[in-house]
Length: 135
View (cartoon, rainbow, N blue to C red):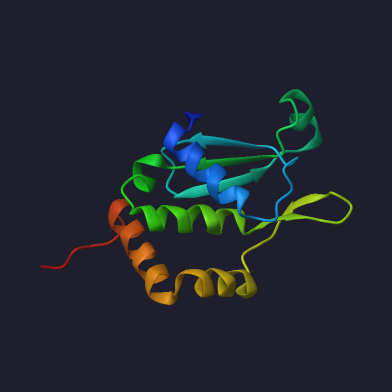
């Protein structure tokens, strides 16, 4: 069974700092966790039952801190920004997660530039052990 634990204070602070700069309403509650998963991050929307028993937590963000902490500060910020870019709140206050789309990535590219995005993905592959080194 997967082991989930509360994320470190540094990661939570980074997440909250980036989140404050978004248009996500403050009433949306996040729980930020750590897990040694393969993905750098994963975001999960809670169903109504889970929201009611967890004191209203709407979304859980799970980071692989082991990888995230090896990235540069700028790349860490990009990862959190990319994670939050899929959170949508309708005018009727319905929370949903958008599937990745081109428009969202264009906003990320405009904010950070394509070279930074490419470096982030290469760095992430190296730290997760997915990139084979050729000598």
